[in-house]
Length: 498
Image 1 (tube, rainbow, N blue to C red):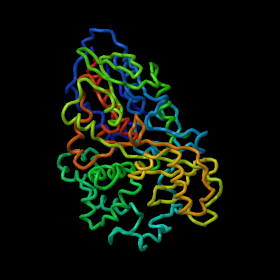
Image 2 (image 1 turned 90 degrees about the vertical axis):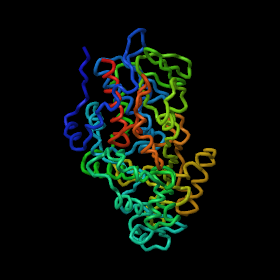
Image 3 (image 1 turned 60 degrees about the vertical axis):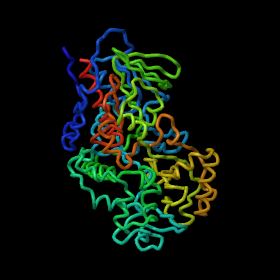
Image 4 (image 1 turned 180 degrees about the vertical axis):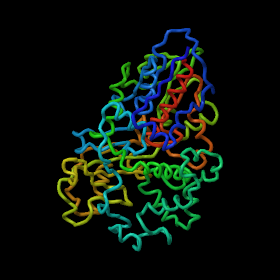
């Protein structure tokens, strides 16, 4: 007789899921496709081996464990969280988030586990979007206040799109053209909208944007991808709908007190079975009745099923037998991740009082988004640290440099731009997601044509090898997308284990 599948539910989660349509994510989309049943011929190290101790892997492992299955987690690093990573206080005062910053009010699964495992949710902590009145635009060697931007000569945007910020013009276009139904967060994968799976560059050109305006809006400090030609506008439509949906849960969400990494740490502490840290995987080989995993240490583990939650950028470094075929293989090889480099400083003086300008700057130079962070809940107006947050081609350029040279180059750029910063910035911490072997970037982004070609194939099981991770989510994005994917994969595997 099959074991009853028990899904984790918090007090408010069911209602939140209904309101946001998230029950769709629990549907076992690929049950029976390319999967096998357990023959039980040999002894195994676990019923399921989960590769990756990020949110998707932990959520799946806890669900499997709650239903009586033997689970082993393998993690390449020495911590829980994956791309949810909070800086240590000793490294950066105020312990800002190095990855996964905000928790949306509709992050039902994530808020549920936070409540279940006693992680307190506090106020949202801005990282790359400053508080109102605290930003300065540094464009073409000009310092421009937000109320000056619309009519400033350095503003290259066409009429009708000059208000807001250097990047908000593109979002105005996405909002104007978005064809996706606001109440359907799965619509981005509907073939009906495939015609929009084309480059942002093409769409903005049709709206009258010059190459200069497009570069400023979507290829300078872009939170997604690298430039307008290498990202699908359909992805931005999905993001816009997701943001709109999250806004409906006003007053909920925020950030975990002590840092968002406290949530996966609490999940890991609640998991009662084995976790192998510092155990990178070298190969995954499906056999007749199970799967064998070989670690880089040459240690071997076997289980009837394996759940791989690694980003595609990390997965393609692992030898898999049989190799995913056709479109799925292409998807794992080609899916890209947003470049991100962070250089953290401790301010040694109140430079903003010296020049009477806002403390944070949006720059069109290698300084990226230079943000003054205020992460002391006891003194919310105190600047606890500053970060030069680099994305797009700038991050790729900086990450190729020697770390010491990169820090020096960014620091000099800041000091040359703004004299009050000379002697004001004490370097404290450097973090890159670009060359991180287990990430390859901050989060996945879809190039033109990839949603139509790849999205429906990335989560399909490869024999006894199953997949999860935010890049396989259908309804949600970010941390909640990771949780959604882990839940879907756990149900998928439980239906096969019986």
